[in-house]
Image 1 (cartoon, rainbow, N blue to C red):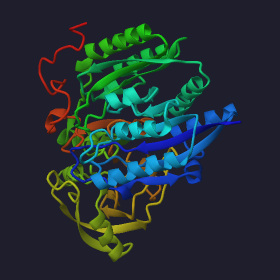
Image 2 (tube, rainbow, N blue to C red; image 1 turned 90 degrees about the vertical axis):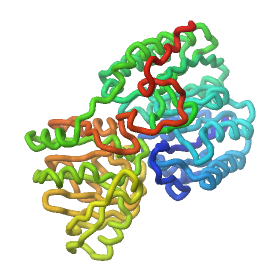
Image 3 (cartoon, rainbow, N blue to C red; image 1 turned 120 degrees about the vertical axis):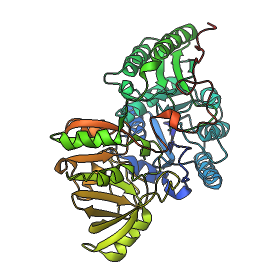
Image 4 (cartoon, one colour; image 1 turned 180 degrees about the horizontal axis):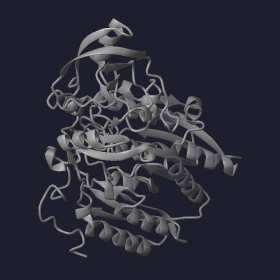
Length: 490
């Protein structure tokens, strides 16, 4: 008789400095068979796990519930309760299972719940009993004691920008199979690092963080290795557990797990000064773009919807207008009232709109702009990994050489498809503004002549000292001076 394996997903990365809350309707939800169908053929953890289990041939996959949202502000309490209760109910209704593979993000935060994933994982454990539970995580997860104590194995991404979602799902499923077959007994070591990190050294293809990840991979691939990773947390999820962590899980070898976790942790700590973003002022960035040949890409990490920002920053747009920038420019913004005005006017209409500052008004003052409506769209499109977006209605506004993609709801402005799906091809422009700290590089490095990380205001600014941290571990680098080494007592 086939062993039954439960699959579930819960994902949203929270930026607590973003005042616009996340609500239930922001989540893309699939239940039961629909969950399996909606992830078929995608490059996601769910698809990776299902493919490994299917290929093994001994398992019956039990899809329960998948709920995923674009990153955003804290989740309202009632909406979070509804979401978590529905997930636990779906899992209880699935009946007895032999194991569970859960795909979580790890950096969710509710209005009154600092650890939604730990909470739901504890409730899932109560519902399932002692069966093996393996959890895949984003490497920006906030690691809490509940996560570590409740899961049998935590399996984090190994790439930044994240290109190994599918492979991480595969790694998680393979670990689950070993546990179900009785071939492994997990022993977990954790090293806590009081540091928040940003910047290009996090690029795993070449930075120091990549060196640390390769140490993790060597450990994971050793005879006793099960899973290893450096989980740097999401610097904008300001909750009490926020800091970096090294997690190493071995097969019944705690000494090895502790030794490797400390070795990797010391490497990260010793190089902490490098893990800070190098930012360029807006004025200097515009001057560079004006004098450069080929495509220039501005990274507006401060308003990165991929990191949880509101997406309504008009700081770069305003700077370009004030500088009389005349090159062909492509930029995105979230502004539901502006979309509604464009829909009322219709395609090719000349209108005056107030743009920006509708979701984070304390940071951004609306700009009054004379534009024409270039096109209108229903906002239905798929990202590069095959998952569906929920943009709401969309319009493209033109103001001279500047084209503005305006969405009713936040979307990931990371890859090229968010633009291409609305008739805008980044290669046709001289300047493209993305709302992503580094994930965009996967899609733009091959076509960009220059990439500039711009220092502008926002709830996800890489200038961490500009943000009002109140809850994270303290003292912590780089917010505080003379942070004691976590290894001083060892």
